Image (cartoon, rainbow, N blue to C red):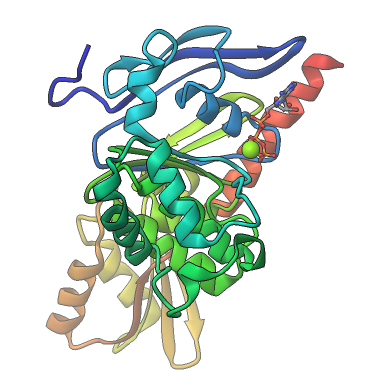
Length: 330
Ligand SMILES: Nc1ncnc2c1ncn2[C@@H]1O[C@H](COP(=O)(O)OP(=O)(O)OP(=O)(O)O)[C@@H](O)[C@H]1O
Ligand SMILES: [Mg+2]
């Protein structure tokens, strides 16, 4: 069935995959809405690639159901493949081919009419920064650096302009500058495409993706926006401020009297007073603190929200999952 507006672009229900005796994907469910960039995050062997391969109709699930753009990945695999650009973990390229030659060949495989191929290749080359340096399109694939190979791989999946992109570790093996370039590229794709990508690296996914799905041992252990996940790590907002203009206990009492402020801890920092503030619920008391300081003629030299480390959270929950898995098998 084709999707109606508002139905998810990717819908996964109770998906399970056994490789013989190995349970790689264990009853996972999630959905991805049109225009979202979703990051699939998890340690080695978590089941990321397996899930992505099932979504692209390359691998049958053992149980459960998945649809892409309303089409069943098992029963309607041709329809699914037409709508998906899939970049696997290691991009298979034919070494002796030149970049333009390869992309033109791939355009033919994708049933792009002959007279439209050149324009399609030029379009993706432009988009994936392959049009510079000038001779790039004439270089042999086996002489490209890793980053340029990844770009060719991405250009390839964009050729038929599919609405859904499934990218398995698109930044693996890239240097920091190339990672940044790839990230910008992917972010730019969100306007027209729905993207799901996998990674081990939290910081990277956090910057690119609107939503995160954290998977370990074949199960989803956490999901949400990075803001929501962060809330789970530290609870409510924490604010740090340094001010002067009154005795520390007076400053603490004034700030503590604000509606949006819960607990306040005080520290001396030379002439300044440092306050560590827990906000009430989801509120952000920074503007109220600023207004209070202005009214009372206090001077503020610092006022910031403390950013919790999602990295710690990630390590903690994936570690818990691994310990449980080990315990079960023991
Ligand atoms: N073809 C296969 N045959 C048997 N077991 C497999 C096969 N492919 C994957 N597995 C197992 O399934 C589990 C999940 O593997 P998968 O490749 O999906 O993990 P991943 O999250 O992509 O890991 P990585 O981050 O290392 O790429 C692992 O235990 C792996 O050993
Ligand atoms: Mg993988």
